[in-house]
Length: 407
Image (cartoon, rainbow, N blue to C red; front, side):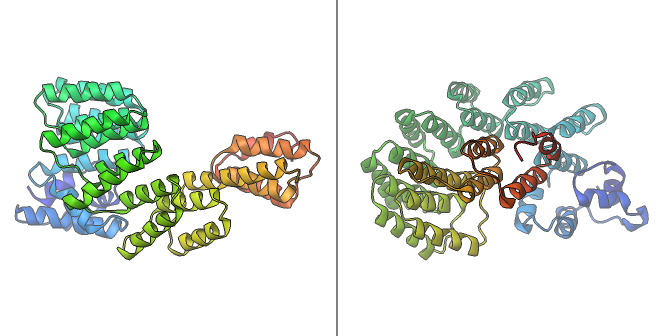
């Protein structure tokens, strides 16, 4: 195998800049290198480092290392399938799969797993399940990754019975579930309110010799706190310490949020400080839990300070975080109304803008109508909020169709 051949078989269309580069380079650029793994490995890494700076070199090496023992052409095709799936262009990935089946190289289980994961990420579990059935038609066998991907997808849409059915099927076939498989099932059961069943899965995992990781424990701890079972949640925390399971941001966030729920705000804030002392970096979910709970306790000033700290730490808020804050603001407005303090146009404007930014356009429009119904007139801030948010979401046509009476 050499790079002259790699240049010849590189596809015309690809989501990866390094593949496009290979197409543009003249054939004279390619020399016949030794066919050692190191040569085949380092050249693509160097190109990826140049054209995909956001991907960490270590991640690239791990990714490429998976394919060192496979045909380089298959690796290139798989990169393209993966690239389209990462970009949400699963239909193009399917087209590429069909081309591979017709013209070669034949897709392998990694290619199918990538596509199945791509469909699961966009919520199309039905098509993902159909793809799994297709695996048998091309003389391949689903592996643990195939089943775990589908189990996780079913759990996320709370189809726990389907997830358990997939689990039973894989064990019948002799496949051994790993810690990720078990944790996915536990998470699905907990989200469905079946914490006792999740604990049974946890015990089953231990009995077969699979060691729980920090995600396994965090899943149970978070759910037990939500059920008001603080004693058992702390018992699992103690078990982690005894077994030497490391605490990461996910575990600390679950414990911190649980302590708030248990009416122990000082302990929760201390847990946040321990997280910082351990040189761990709080993420958006950590800050959401902390700021949201502080606001619910009425400590808005401290919540604002934490929001400022979040911004200084360059932690970007996600939609859920924005929604959490704006919902808290809405609760404050409701309390104002209960106390006969009527909100003014600035209060409404802030809420409208917040819901727009959180992607809740319907609620924003309802608030605008409510504002007009109580006799308040929109100001420039409200109008700018409408224009900017409709423009940002590419919905200016809808904005222009709004009744003139509204704006």
